[in-house]
Length: 391
Image (cartoon, rainbow, N blue to C red; front, top):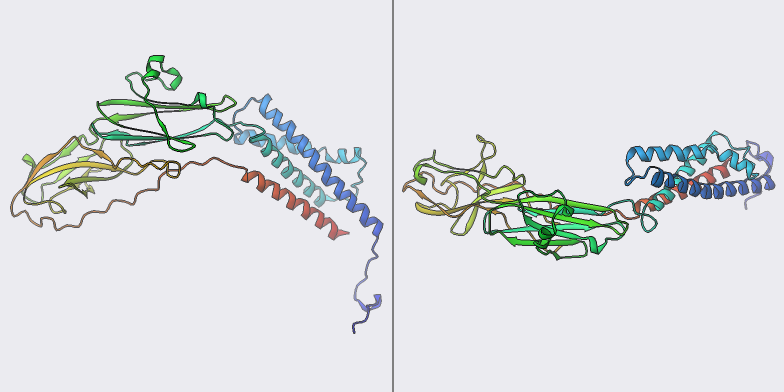
């Protein structure tokens, strides 16, 4: 059976527990935390009003945010006077306690500022628009696909949501610059999901087509996208052997995609309805090359179509639609392979680089606010625990 320890049995002196002093300091800790919470909310309201109205800003950039932090921490310097005015005795606060108090003030202020800066309280951000075009250079008579992701962190104004594709020579930079007659010529897009609209059409005439996407949110903030699609030969250079006849290993086909195509995945030659990959030329940058040593060729005549295939750029996850397979040449070209061509069809088909993942777009939620709130609560608990350990 264990016996009770006597004061003389321990190698150190046990301080007397002052219950009244413990209760007094606990009440002070509680009062200062409550004051910090309320005061940080007031400071957040002041700094947000300064940011929102005095600066008349639209987005909180890095410089503006640093300025708000400095203002908030300057207000934190008034805390000793506020505690004194409220008759809260903090004479026992040392440097560590004041550092913890200012840190807690910062995180409380940051949490309230994030809440004030986001819906449903406030909306400082214009709608987000992402447009995927596949392809942006297309051969005559083939399909072009466009998809637009349009979203806002609060709400879009459906009456101010506009989509347009037009063939224009002197095109304005925004949808608002189009005339009424031009707007009437805009072809309708289909809504594929809550935030994605799509448009697909088969080209009938060469030229430059302009697309416009414009959106406003419920607070009147505006965003727009403008780009071009070229309808014409996507493979302006197709150099083959003399008289399009292969007689020896020096005879090759060199193909150069249109310079405006920056998303090439592979260039292919199609024989008998089956596509085969060409390989990128090591001697001529920007060109793709093949010859009858690769698969698909046969002695005699070969009806060949050459096409360039791009990486997918559709908005995966937002629309159950896919882009067309690629950009095509102007038509069939006949090549002849002489009998006895060396190593006919013996080379392995080249493997193009791995396709990149389709692009995606996301809008932020309240995760950041919850993280800041959790940090603030953790700091408050840590501050109280530390103060308890010192008593």
